[in-house]
Image (cartoon, rainbow, N blue to C red; front, side):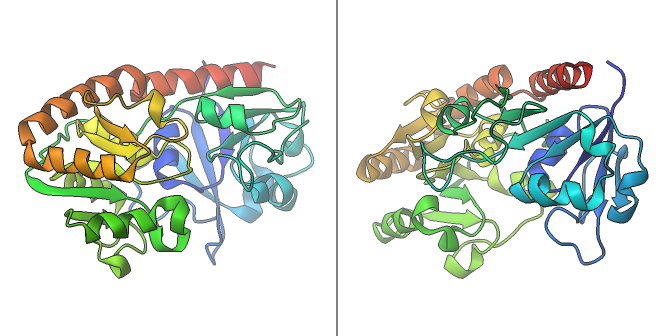
Length: 317
């Protein structure tokens, strides 16, 4: 398809790095005080050069083909602040990253009943659970744009969880389970914003994160309620076994004893984690299976093709 001129706000850096692998002309609005969504490319970006920053005040002068929203603010306020009236009539996508809140089944989406927009969910679970009204919807499953040569090492007999602000997010992010499992003697750590204050590693830039993560025996995810975490897909991609709660979309991805372990019984998860700590060869076998799964279901090539089909459908219509 022809190259499109696409405006998107910088909301989730890892996802933005992946979606911009589609070779279009991407524009990121920027403001000097860097409020949410307006940081441009950000610091140390690994995005392609065709992803360009543009002052928010100049956006209205761009010749655009497509607008992509990702937050209620993008949809309800930002478009009226920085887009021209003509641009607001362009084809539009709302990319919904998260599972519904505040209620898992009765939360109505902000873009519900908007016939002039396509609502794209990142998991089938999310699309099922959101009340989308009559807005057209589709699903594009995740991928990640990380070093394709990076491989699981697993020599460090510890588990690691990649999550931002676990303590602040509390039970949703499994902070209570993290503390309980560590109290029972499991060597677990966490990495991400706010992790240092709870005994973790701290924040590591995305371009260096996965090389560090690959050293650990397994990745664990204690998210009670979340979209399919990108950290899980990143672990699968480098060939790392995953131990996770069997909630939301995760049970459609991880098969027990094949790619790692899933359960909603914390004691069972503790036993599974201990098994991987005690059996590095089994951890490597499951990691090899995890990598095959990622290549089949979450490859970057599949992701790029899926998004280009969506773009062609939306802009063509």
